[in-house]
Image 1 (cartoon, rainbow, N blue to C red):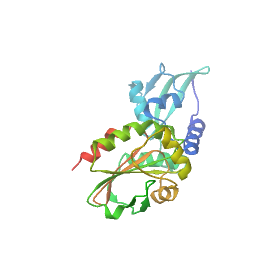
Image 2 (cartoon, one colour):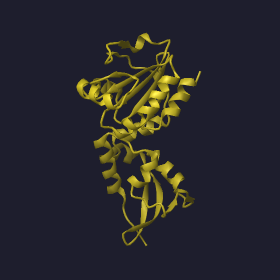
Image 3 (cartoon, rainbow, N blue to C red):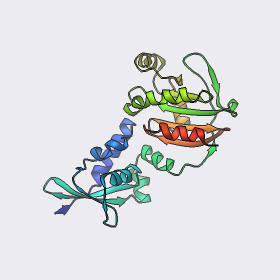
Image 4 (cartoon, rainbow, N blue to C red):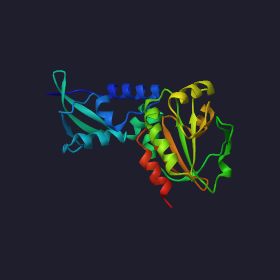
Amino acid sequence: MKSTNFKSKFIALCMLLMGNSVLFSQQTIMEAFGIPLESIKKDQKGNILTNAQFSDSLYTAKYIFDPILEGTKMTEAKLKLIGPELIAKKVPEAIKQLIKTLDFKPKPAIDFTVTDMKGKKYQLSKLKNKTVVLNFWYTNCGPCIKEIPELNELVKANPDVIFIAFAEDKSNITKKFLTKHPFTYAIVPDASKISRQYGIAAFPTHYVVKNGMFTHKFISDGSTKKIQDAINEK
């Protein structure tokens, strides 16, 4: 059995993530890294992990892993903590943002004034008595599209909450997309300027705003329950 250096493959995956601006869902992270389900998984101390435990660890973006190969087949994978130097030099902004969401602290919300596709104007600073949920997405983003039906259910379940979705695409492209994929948030097209203002580097990204404060931030699909829990928090 022999060990190989995984750094080049890890960096290549990071570049793929950065280029597509789409994060892999937790269900596909093992497949994305090319890790056979039948291989042995270990933590840093050598303790055996289940596939779910190993996948969850990778999904935090705090670990890479060293593979053990027999010929060309990976038979074992051992977690390895990503040090601050590697994070600073090698990990793209999308992954850095994912790491930051794990320890997100409330902070003042960045104000904006926008008009949605129905002509309604929103100014965040004038909505301090409201809970506001923001979604950053684009029409070719697989995880963004996947979560739209669940986000529509959120809108239906929370009539007193304001939901605003910032689309990266131009108005005509967004309008065409919405004919096939109804999205009941207030849709603001051509919103790349807002995305840059908010420092968005991964899609979809969600913010919950209460009393003029960012209270929660979530990245990637599968965030619907977390958003609802954040809305319910007093």
